[in-house]
Amino acid sequence: MKEIRIGLLGFGTIGTGVVKALQNNAELVSQRLGARLTLAKIADLDITTDRGVKVDPALLTTNAEEVISGDDIDIVIELIGGYEPARSFVLKAIENGKHIVTANKALLALHGEEIFAAAAANRVEVLFEASVGGGIPVISAIKENLGVNSFASVFGILNGTCNYILTRMTDEGADFSEVLKDAQANGYAEADPTFDIEGVDTAHKLALLISLCFGTKIDFDAIYSEGISGVSALDIQYARQFGYALKLLAISKYDAGRIEARVHPTMIPLQHPLADVSGVFNAVRLVGDFVGPVMLYGRGAGMEPTASAVCGDLMAIGRNILAGGASRSPAMGCPPETMSTLEIKGMEEIVSQYYLRFAATDQPGVLAHISGILGRYDISIASMIQPERKAGGPVPIVIMTHEALEKNVRSALAEIDQLDVVLNKSCFIRIESDLD
Ligand code: HSE
Image (cartoon, rainbow, N blue to C red; front, top):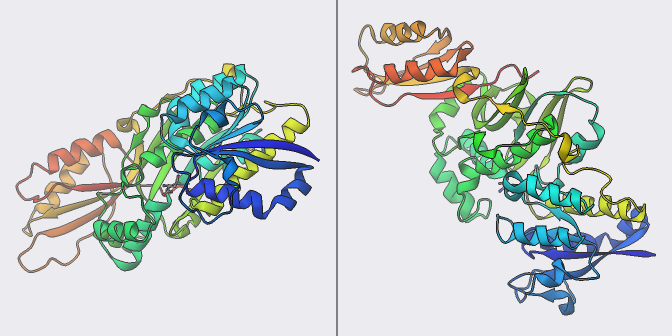
């Protein structure tokens, strides 16, 4: 039986999962592929820690060169994460004619153009199914099965850490910092969770989805991203009273030759399937002109699901090698020279419904002041609640608007925040009601 030889860069959690999967399901993989996937080298700075898997010590090295430049390696799996040295290692491996499988969304969101061009020039493949949605096969679905569709939108719950925190804040009424601490103690959140909770990880993943769905190069810095560290349990409770759940949503919509690209806490109707995506689960919802709405759901992170995606990519490349047709499928679904450069709309130009919360003094005329300013900025009120104030405290005023221009909402809130009767900076959260 033919053998396809694999080198692994990064023997962390996902790397360990890949080794386990290739060992536990070796027979199954060989049967399905008609070839053996052989792990030939594993490089990591730490080759002494026991990962709970049996590995021939002769496979382990601290020298990444043995993987990147090893004569007997067909496919390099990059699971180091981050920008450097991952970028240099991947580029060198490509130059050496190795195919690449990676889970590194940060690397591809910022340096994808360079890496994909190098791969095309060297006629090797770069697959990255594990980079978005963990075990959910969303990238191959967009590239292959949904390839005929023109996409109107892509939405995603793409960060398990944030979804876990928001789910617990919803279920327990707990505060953000309290749940984050607990999540870190239980190993659900990284010791430095900044990329996750500030929406950066989600924006990296959205960048890849946008590129795949709309065939465009991506200016990562033009993607708006706002995380969940400012979300309060109070807003989650009020959202529910209006019939909405709060999620960190990645949103992209096609609009007359331009796109929206944004990540922020978003209220979505409780009855929509995305509202039921709880805990560490992820989901991606796409709308294609022929297929209509499609939702893919599953485990978005973790050792086994992510290893499943990495191994699927290994098998896909393995099939191409066996067929003598490497580089069959361009990394982003279209060849680099046919990619367009769609402009990303500025946030002030977007139109959305809004949840607004003000803390005001309880006296006659306050509501008239606030609604007067909203009216002047063409912001129409859809519904409103004024929950009971606590003795002597400010009164919360919670307003849901009809669709309004974000520029107007920001200007109105800046003016409202100047009123003597408004005590704290007002809060606004965007709403996506029109999900089907
Ligand atoms: N840190 C990510 C998450 C998983 O919490 O979903 C890796 O992308």
